[in-house]
Amino acid sequence: MESKEKFDFNSEKHDVSQFVDDIYNNSINEHRALNEVSEIEVKSFIRDVIEEMNLLEKIGERDKRLIDISNEFVRNIEAIWVFSGPGTYDRPTKEDRYKDYPWAKGMDRARLNYAAQLVRKVTMARLNKDFKGPLSAIKETKQLTKKAILESGPYIIYNGTIEENENVKEILNREGIIMPPEKVMVIEEPIEKTVDQVKTFKLPEGAYMIGKEIAVVSHAPHLSRIIRMVNRYKPFPPDVKMKLFPLATPKEGKEEYIQKEISGLLYYIYVSDDHDAVKEPYSYEINVSEGKK
Image 1: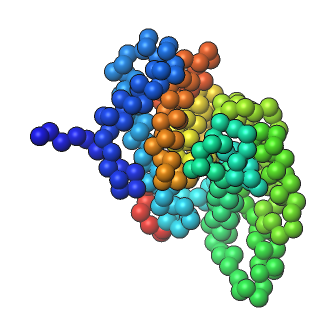
Image 2: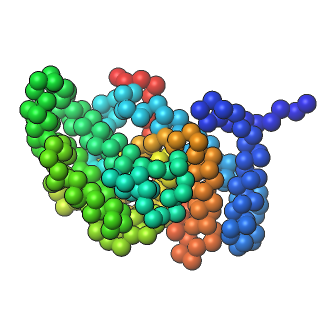
Image 3: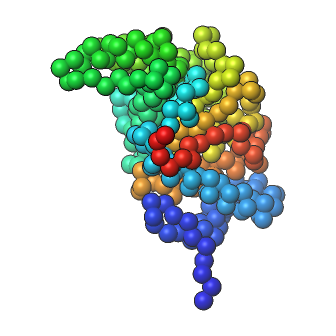
């Protein structure tokens, strides 16, 4: 009996061909104009993106606490672009298309928390020091960390909906927050979807980007859409390198999220009026090392 090709999500095996067929058929049902595109071309693209998302998921699982990321990989990051997600920082859900999906709860908070961890990681790498301190001096340690980030840390760039943006700005002024408000740029432009975030992106005035890099933080399947929209609109200087920092999707939502993102990506590449994404991703780097150096 001929064996079928498999791929894995958290060590569970799945039939790739069937998954590709399911995504293709569902996408055709949603976007009838895809019938005008070669089925072979579309299915080949779906297969490639599944493989890409699967790799990003694995990296997200491994690097969720940034332990296995070397100082060399993060040292030149000057800006961290955080894509807003389902919910807000304070609320796990809000009125969006993911409100009824339990696995999507708290994604916005998870992305922002990860970005804050990455800010500390970059700052420590630049200064070659650790910000750990005794519990008896936790207040002093926080103050020293905040000062170090202000002087030597990267920027966070965030552009979400009005509700998401207002929540982030309010949080930055809370007592005990380590992230300096001066190091967070909230882009306040009308946002409804990911392509709006890409098209309205801009760098902070104080960011010195020559020889520097941009980190992009979002959940793994979402990143595959982002990098193709970035390649369509190229919102930052071409000599700036982009590094991806994926968050793993909760186990129960991995397949569903991948299906949704690929279906949306097919729409933006082949169907949308402005063709807001392209098949080839913007050049990027990911942490492929297996351990901290």
